[in-house]
Image (cartoon, rainbow, N blue to C red; front, top):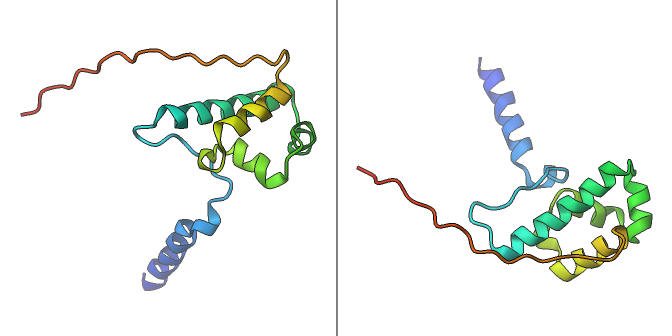
Length: 116
């Protein structure tokens, strides 16, 4: 039983090591800013384009003129590594005509349930 516990602890250390989280799809934080949402949506649009057109990562690298690491950061939504203007530039290389629309809308007020 002790050996199983040790191997489980070793496994936990391995999966919790930040070096091993390279290819993990990121999600937005709990309360994202509008900037984070915009960057996330741009990354998802680029991923959707890749999937819709059955492009390999290498083909996407050539279309966007980026490195493998940059493509992976976009496809796995590493939004903190990019500015909005960079992501818009990359998206405009894929989508034709070059049209990107930004919509600003008010959010509906959320009603919090009373707590006892």
